Image: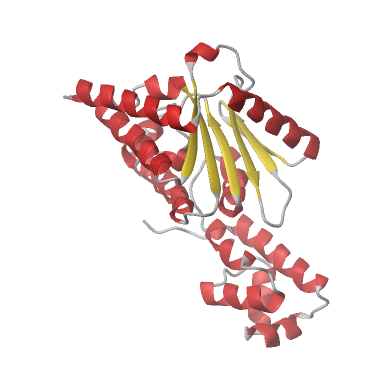
Length: 274
């Protein structure tokens, strides 16, 4: 499936390039000489009219001593199809060095298998065409590529027990999905904590929360409800979300016990599927 460029992201990319260039007191011509990229091409990138390729991004990183920022940010320029309220969060997610996410009802998108994601995206109202669903599915599966790097981002996932018990797509799909989470946890790629039903009331009952930290930016929090979501950058609000997450984490099962529970539920689904 072809992926179109995202003009909004290109504009932000260009603004960041101009900001870093000006901070170093460089003209476009001087940056052109340092990066071996034509001045006109740099002008196009800064204006959001052109997407640099990987080699250009690496040259800009080296010329501006940006620590790989411009290469890392390239995937955010792809016009991936997501809900409008998640667009900003998606860009942040791709740059995060650490992510802590809470899923109250569904497996978080980063961890979803293709079959599970297909079942989730095929639901809802108004109904989606197969083409609309498949575009959303491609984006959701592409997000998981950040897990290919073993070291970054560091991912912690907290799941309500309801996530394990709700048979999205049927028992076979759930068995595969839960075993995927177990595999990620056993390989030490992610940490997993389950909030069991027995906890009752906890600090994150109100909805989805995702906390993100970055190498060069202050942390942000993303909160989501029905047909709505918002990225919070205000330090006081971000801190409130972090504290709430920590409180809920204190009520959750340990990583080891969580994996044991998820494994057990997956076995139950396997028996049911047969």
